[in-house]
Length: 207
Image (cartoon, rainbow, N blue to C red; front, side, top):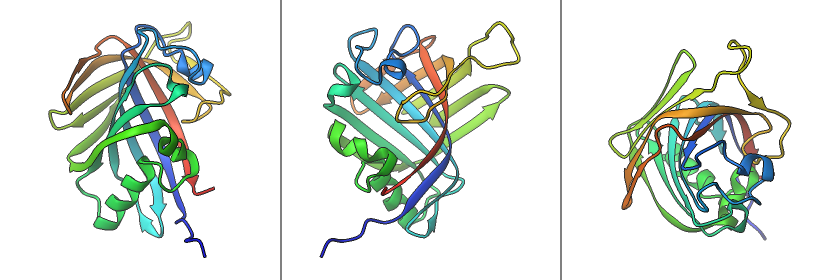
């Protein structure tokens, strides 16, 4: 008899900053087009507004991710690491590690296929703050990031790529990093001024 995977859900916001010099081609190509530099290095921040894992509340927690992809995103062989909000309960921490390693399927289940090396997960002070249109992620000295939507013809409206098949969510706000600093797992990255994304997320699993 097979074990039943736990029910989980996360609603909130995701920000991402990568080494692409212009807006990331992965959004439109769904990972089939090479990143602008031929490889992808990125940090990710997730703000969980509401969520649960097997009955345990995840609301109000934040997560930071490091992602290192050697070529086209769709070809896999990713390396990834997770920083889980130090305020998480033991049950919430374990649940978030399982979600972000893809072990409980659903929206993030592709991680179990694409990630060849999970570098690790650890508790950290993870701060996700919104000031005006700018979002800031701080994971101690390991990830220090800031992204702001680019300005369009109507400065009051965000520039959004809508109705995509992108795994994170269908509507991606085009942004730029004011700061993108990573010092973790032997990576020394600085992506100030490079491609960034903002996405409202509504993830769930295992189905």
